[in-house]
Length: 371
Length: 98
Image (spheres, rainbow over the protein chains, first blue to last red):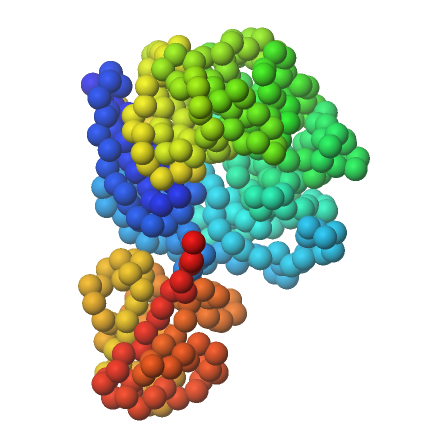
């Protein structure tokens, strides 16, 4: 019997939610690291019992924990994130240059093949890598040479929040930064180039089609089609079929094309999910109705999925790292809200039910499908 | 023997239940106490002082003998009562308000 482990990072701790393959009944374990912001928890595809967790707060800074037993026990590992060489400067809110300053780890992305290799996306935006299970971290500094002086934090900070590893090419990595845009490396992280062609930020940038500066919220890929990426931008849902060389909008009939999360069905590369949010100034669902939207055509044509979700007086948000899918059949889809609910669908989104309702605000959701 | 009182989150992180007792060479200073603390509990590195600058994290305070030592030079001698173990060196998280 297969099992599911949902790894939930919240504003006040981490939780591990477990179920068998039926996904009907759930156990809630935690909080781990109670009281800390847990931006992200993620397991190694190469060893599902190896988990990494990013905990931080304003008092004590950044801590990284590692588990070798699927989240039952944890040990602290290295938390020294030091920019390579002279850190340099980026654009500040007032247009002046501001020194790069490490604040926290937003996202941890374990290697697809080695449990001891893990990437960390941090604020102020940079990419770090550990090859010793998180004990030590080294920056991949080439990224910040790509017009880093023009990168500027958005209201939520300048975080590197998305790391997508190409399963067909271990030297290719995609990353995304708010508010700098999307970038790709073809040499394992040594050199990078912006991949923002086709993005339009009409209200956010003086040059709507600037090479960098776009507020990308999330990128998702289906492993069978690593050249196709789906993006939830600040506004606009986008796709590329040439690894980011050119993007086109696929927002179609969405009630709002603002949002944070986007993900791809585990077995259908053209089936994608978003959660529309009303606007950049009103971070809650349109009409107070929490609806996931699914497209079975890779975008453009969307259907609302609302069965089991609150359809009145719902004013939560779903943050960028808070949606994930399992690989069972039918595909399970999961998301967490700033209201503390974690919703699950065991039928690819047709119907939903809460696994748990009253957690602290959910920052991230990851799912492991266990043998 | 110098007694150090950690805030709750750091006690959990360091897996200590109460006060931490440290042997620190004379003259004991905030810097030498923190050096000894981090040597014994390496998971605390970076959580009290910044890794690179070694400056106190902004939202932490150092109290002892009813005084706020947070703004004293890191190499200033600690009060005799702290050095003698009569009073603890307290690492305190600033109040968050709200």
